[in-house]
Image 1 (spheres, rainbow, N blue to C red):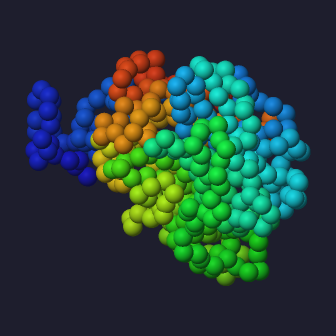
Image 2: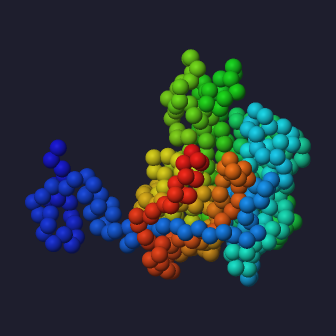
Image 3: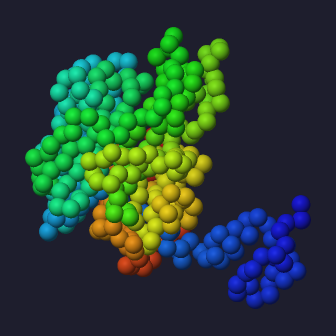
Length: 407
């Protein structure tokens, strides 16, 4: 294995060092993919810092999670999020009842809060409630995103009906308003549904026990994240196929080769916010990531891929918004982030990026309810923040222990 010769590769500024030498695969990537730059010089690289928020902090018995994109109307910031009513701690799918939640996104509604400075927030109340009994969204509505478009406001959110089990199909619903404060007008049908179904094993209730998979999004479509691009509404979303977890040992006679990742990102495009949303023919557009998180950057689309999959914890970019390439590797990224990105909905052809947003801290044994914090970073064309270009980030004992306990 002699390495790769430089004779057939054009490099700049090598000062003759590699003349007549061979390159390792890693050094070829350093020269070609990474452009001979350190991460601190990479516009797609950032570290993150985190700060407490007033008004959205931990509260016993109440879950606040999944912040939306943050919008600013005049001098006021708005964020929308998943919120539970005050109740007992979640008990899992098998023990959940009509009044006891299975998890921290069960038995929830969409609430909103406002702020003048992005740090001190005041919870304003419900934006979108669960639907009437027997409807597609009567059990829980959660993981929202807000679209500001042509003077109106559109809330997209994940929805599930009763009874809520690990095999329940999840859809994306929508409500709209002429004001960020409401009132909100609920669509009585989903705007996006799971794809072609597979088939569960009938003798089991486990989502992993599958006879056939169906499409990459045959089980769940959720975590909608919107941008306006090419004068259209582009909805990126997180997708689950039926049979998540089927790569692990199955009962006798069960176990197929899964054609899609457990977690992937799909894209659906509409001419207007009310749809119809048409799924892109080459979906999924990412084979990794736990939430769909995108923003316009320069003449393309950037995405933060976190938590799951072979390309987790990366920033990626696609000139066409579809064929993403890894541009940097990141550590300790925000969980379920909501960005303050001023040009997310302006149909820009030169996206400026962002520097802050809101993340949630998920539930733990000591704190069984999710809550929200602020994060800052440098993923913006407008600034050069060396503080958030640091590498070699070290974790203290508290961070290490918490990370271990969350696994």
